[in-house]
Length: 172
Image: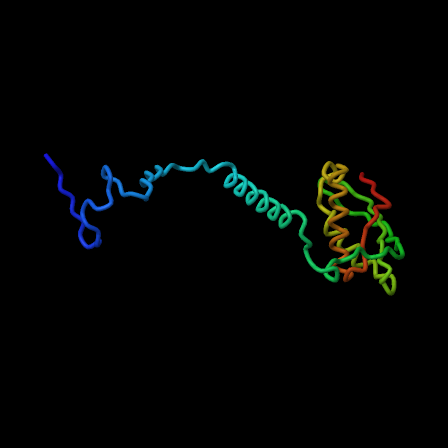
């Protein structure tokens, strides 16, 4: 059975210029290629890796290397000045024991005059009195108490005392 073909509105007569069903002088249309997914390759993976490296570097700089302030805010250590000896004092310990404590104060170079040692002795009595012989005989505890006394005296003397040296430390 013959198939009838109709073309509407093209202005070309049906069957004119065709040989075997194909137009004369025009190439046969090529079939459209099938759409296939292109392999993505390594480019997106490299972009993600580069982004991770940049973020890790920024985090490392922020937490480890960034400056904490301007140079004016950085407090420099005071210069040592005169050393003032404080007379040894006997302190009561727990259990009827005694501590003979003598110490010296390392002043800063900015200290105008030697401070009154009565404040230093008062802080030492408050810190060392009432402790046991075993407690104050431990070298680690002794250093901790000395450092704590130095902090208290630095505050009491408005930063003019920068260190405390134990010169006499005898228990009985």
